[in-house]
Length: 73
Image 1 (cartoon, helix red, strand yellow):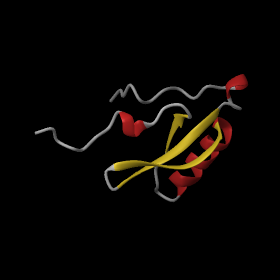
Image 2 (image 1 turned 90 degrees about the vertical axis):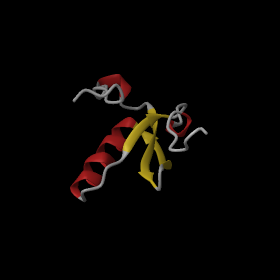
Image 3 (image 1 turned 135 degrees about the horizontal axis):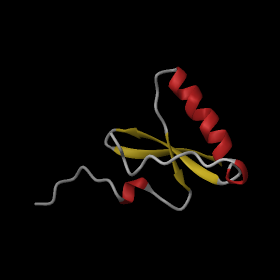
């Protein structure tokens, strides 16, 4: 299944780009770390080895701005 949120990992000169590492808990996105893309990808693989999943977003994008479990009455 294709998701517009899944993008190929940029290589080469883009690896020093800073990202925010998030996890999803209790119906919200929780930021846990700021780091380079290269370090974040390494952390992601390590998390997967523990059957955990983390998500990487650009530092200027807060996924909580786009996701809400609240229903509008």
